[in-house]
Length: 251
Image 1: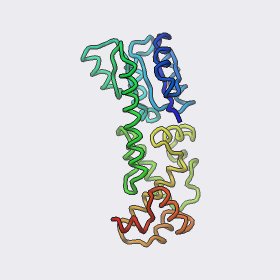
Image 2: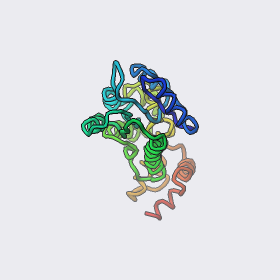
Image 3: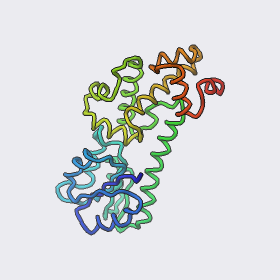
Image 4: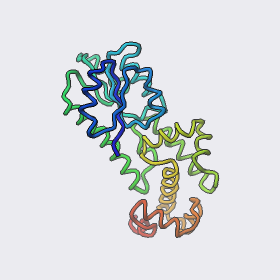
């Protein structure tokens, strides 16, 4: 699936130029009005944002600061484009939380390389988390706010492992966010659905218990809320490419 990239620039020609450069590899959404950005983020799962700095109503620095200060959007990589080439402008851009700062005029090849690197780094983090039994949920985070968010989700899951009501609705209620908001946030950070994330958190807790050496596989299966030891073993094998018994031996 192509990643969704949001372009923001008050200049329609610049938007068209960037879109033409990227449309073969990514799904492009665009707007000339920074005030429309949050509406677009509410209705789409955005993988990366590219914004001009010098815009009326709200400049790119302010937009970046608002997004990076929001728990809901701070995980999205953001690239600032600007004709300002002073050191102080670069520092200001990075201090507002921008992940990259590119001067105009820019090479489309340079922009593509920045996008590819940012998205590839996120994928590496996700893949490490998903394939490593003992990697904590927060290892997917790219900033402190997301770390705290993921730690809270993990705490809710592991303290409610045996409760059948532990589902998307319950998580959203405890976190005081809407289900669509929670879905978009988790999807963007982990590339997982909430149900998949809950299952993965159960498996990681199971791996932690197995590593401690104080429980048998059947006991761990029961503690972490799986319907049976066989179901637990199959799910563990599918996710980590090894059975629980092999995991214990490898320790």
